[in-house]
Amino acid sequence: MSEESSCHNFVTATSCPLCHEELIINWQGDDIPYFGEVMHITARCDCSFRFADTIILAQRDPVRYELKIENSEDLHSRVVRSTSGTIRIPELGIDVEPGSISESYVTNIEGVLDRILNVVITATKWSKEDADEEKYSKGLEIQQALRDAMEGKKELTVIMEDPLGNSAIISDKAFSRELTPQEASELKTGMIVFDTSSSDMEVDACDSDHSVTN
Image (cartoon, rainbow, N blue to C red; front, side, top):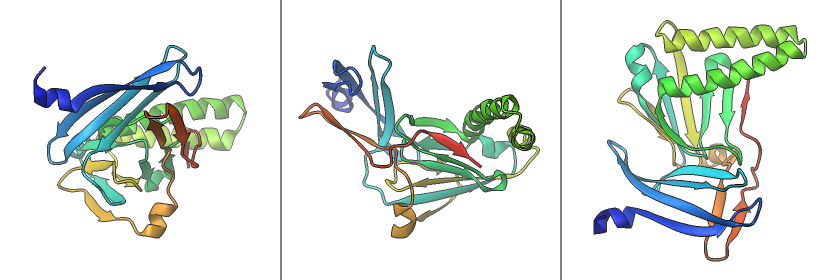
């Protein structure tokens, strides 16, 4: 391993917040074209606890990205979604907000839509089991809209908002702007902060389950 790579890849130790056994945290640097250096952070414990995040190393302001999906090429636009990122699809009334079990990922717009589709499919099944015809019908409608968008047959808008500036939609067509302090304060972060010096973990006050609402 070169000196440069060793500076970007390392491990630290803390205690697992669930079982209190030693938890190894892996830190891996990466350089994303057109975006810059990021750090991928992952931790997994035998008790089933796991954590993953992607942090942009440069200091960032609260940010909002918006991309109109108009053709199949737009589906390939790269997406960096940190644990503090909120995803919105206004045409479908969908908000994907971060929570303590949220994980970061680097994917593309198609991957984002596929993740949301899987959650909607599950929620639709629950509505059918609960005999809620209205929610079941709405769920089927949203599923079809997402599939149509993934096949390039329907236009949708994908919005990414991050009060910590650690998320992005990377596309020449994406419109970005800084969030106002008021807008940033209204967003959840879902953030877990590891303090490796004291082996404690601080959970953000916005500690809610990862959810999709519409």
